Amino acid sequence: QVQLVESGGGLVQAGDSLRVSCAASGRSFSMYAKAWFRQAPGKEREFVAAISWSGSTTYYADSVKGRFIISRDNAKNMVYLQMNSLKPEDTAVYYCAAGVLGSVVGSATNFGSWGQGTQVTVSS
Image (cartoon, rainbow, N blue to C red):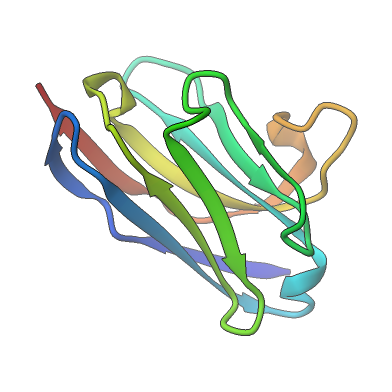
């Protein structure tokens, strides 16, 4: 089991950048793929980005492609999401997750461990 704790959320203005982090503990952290999901008020949780266990392969939702970058540091047991050119529609609670990259990369069912989330609010 992997325990995940997100940090780095906050209130920013449209066009700003923000990096959220995810600290992991537990066995075999480096063996798991990692992902970021988000959930806005009144909406379902949605996939944002994912990264393979080695960090060599990344995946992004179309809505964030070209603006967000997911990365990981297995030596530090950390996963990051660099968010650039933020928009008000990026406002959500951002969750870190650990699991596998299945045939449908963005499926939440592929990820068995979740953090508590960190709030990101983008004002216009």
